[in-house]
Length: 182
Image (cartoon, rainbow, N blue to C red; front, side):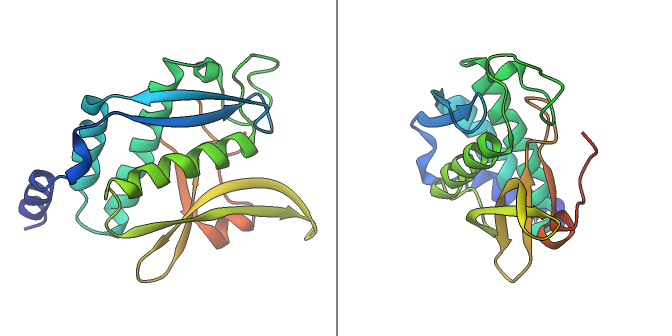
């Protein structure tokens, strides 16, 4: 039954599939640099199909992690962010490196683009959220989505190398330090 639902959903793609879309991607730590990238209609159709195959909120988050990775990989073909590695230290002084400010800002823009294309059926995009060290110093930021019936999740691409699926975790677990060790 889930397979049938996913197939039917994939056939009912969003109306905005025809046009290419431009998104500004931050890089070089603290959004010092921004590069406008263009996603082709064919790339967006691939993302639309991927997201349309989700059959519940959990599967949408799984596909969303993959979609964010794909969007970053394509952005890396047009900008220096292809050199970005997970965390802040693996890419040293490479142009195009991204800190959590770059990732949280850019990922939020990507999520907003997907939402505007009606690609998110079970989630909505929220503002970025900080994670605090010792309760008072913001030391990490992430994009956030909220399930339509409750539950907030970070969509954190900072943990992974460019083009890999984003890490999606419950917001409260992430705030307590959950996530890959990078």
